[in-house]
Image (cartoon, rainbow, N blue to C red; front, side):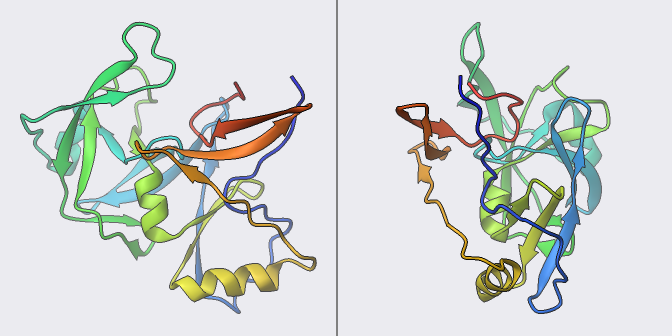
Length: 205
């Protein structure tokens, strides 16, 4: 398979000063396995999560809900986990939260999800920060410099992009499925394909 590179949401070519636009820089940690980790606060508890653009909603391991003072509800929904060889489905429970923030940015999200993620995360990782949080915060993911850039307002995104790039940049439209997954059109050799954008997956497939 022909190799190619895709940087999610924005390809950042340098680390410029952000003084001209109100952008909050939230550092990311790249694990030995290649996953991206980020700190976020839920119900006033600061904790470590995996940043997963392939997850439509943010999620807490149900075994760790007590850390955040959350009780799991009785209602459950069937979630889809791509690559599950046994059933392809997992049980996900919606949970209510009182507070959700990344860095100093408070998110207007009061409901996320929980499921039994035993063995999927390191012991100090509480769950996933998904697409819902990225969309709510209008964040730009800087894969090269391992940071999440969160604008104070929408106009700051355009100002930052315009001032950052010396040359013209290209914005690539994403496609969103009915289930909330984000896809991008790409060309592999002479074939055009549509690929899932997923920082939670380590390889192209």
